[in-house]
Length: 195
Image 1 (cartoon, rainbow, N blue to C red):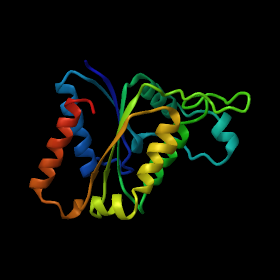
Image 2 (cartoon, one colour):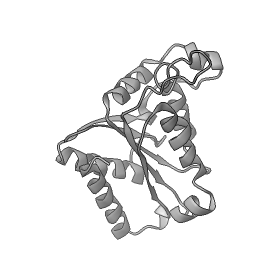
Image 3 (cartoon, rainbow, N blue to C red):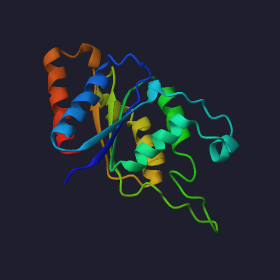
């Protein structure tokens, strides 16, 4: 059964010449060849400001680029986020994008009667793909993959997205062309299964 897949490219460099961009393209190739429909959100190409107050987050005007991103995410069955690990977390531009997109009434309904608001993105699954300079096992086991867990639990899971899978690619600066080809093949395979 084919799926509708939103690929969110979170690298802040709009030139598009990084490993994360190649991994996203490989995933898209595999997914399209398997009959899935793909839409891209390139965060670096969008025009939006950072949120500064609770009032902005709750009721501020929604930039058109963010409104379009919300439409794409609403349309999708499966979300795939790509980003490099910077200072132990996602780049600030991606975090700012997620703060804009996952606002009240899009990700979570307004709470009523002292209860948590309804999770509005239930039924969607996700994969998070992170590239990094350190070994992936060091990030996962020594550092506890803290920023990845935060994205999984506090943004996606909090909105009802699940299940959520992750692919981590470490030591990217030291990787050989053969290793990169294996990584690209892995992404094409995951794309073909829409996982």
